[in-house]
Amino acid sequence: MKRTTSRITIAAVTALVASTLTAGGTVSSAAPPPEAAPVSRVAEAATVPQHHRGNGRDGTVTIYLTRHGQTLLNTLERVQGWTDSPLVVGTNPDGSVLDARVLPVTVGTNLRAREGRIDAAYSADMKRHNETIELLLEGARQSLTVNQDARLREVNFGKYEGAENKEMWTDIVEHLGYTVNHDASATAPVDSTGQNGGWQTMQLLAVNEKGVKALMEAMKELAEEPTETGVVLPAEDCAEVSDRMIRSLNNIARTAVKHRDKRVLVVSSGLSITCAVEALGTRVNAGISNVAVSELQYSNGVWTVNSVGDTSYRQ
Image 1: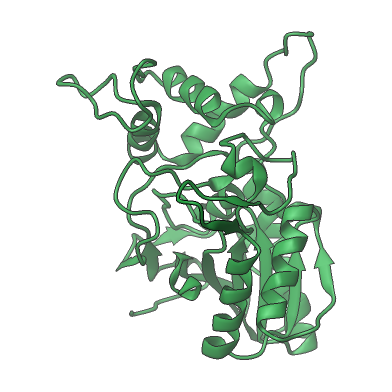
Image 2: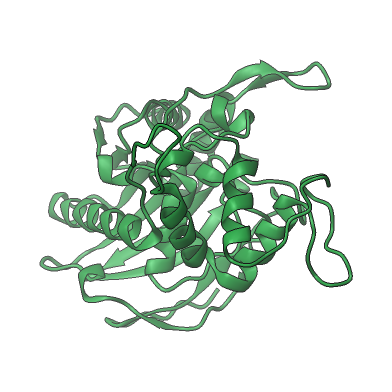
């Protein structure tokens, strides 16, 4: 894959096969298989905002920005932003064991084998992030101090925290002018008018037509409306999330350059990763799967997005 960078542009991007997003970035099954390997393409170049450029020492650092493992709330299809839950352990419909602690170990093993030794580790400050990065490091057979940073958290979904994904995403897409068939299955197709599909179908359509940024702006507007008890809870849109995410990533990269670290593992959440990647000029039209890896490169103050949501380390 050809890579081209300059001090003001980002190019050479990997996009995912289209699938839907749920709160916290869970991939739904409304479209082509969500576990398919990323499809390589070249995105349009985009100007990088000034605060997305590093300052100071020269050096090149690779960031393996990884989504946390599958959690209890992911499994229950509940909105999970600043609400937290552990990695899930249970039983699948076919009777097999569902243990979300296994996959991060596999990804860590493959990361070490394919990319080399990890030099530093960072995660958001919640249980799901800490569990995931410790298991990743276990798989990599490394013992590193994990630096926790609240700026790497998932989007704050305000009054939707803990609600059903169906409720929040239906509200969002209807707020943007789409029509959802409330009686249909989540993945029911659109009708002859291009509307009235299931909520996941309409969510995917909205993401593809409007973009994640527009959906998150709508979410913030709705999520900051008073609750049934009259309480107003703060929520975040992509601009706010990407600002804190990029500031954290800049700090991580500059620290790595200072310490001459080349490979840094960072665990965050799906929509926060999406917002950060889009702030760096890469359009993301699909959900980022649990423990999928996005590779970012920081070189002499310039960020390049090399891949997004790569699931190949899971195999």
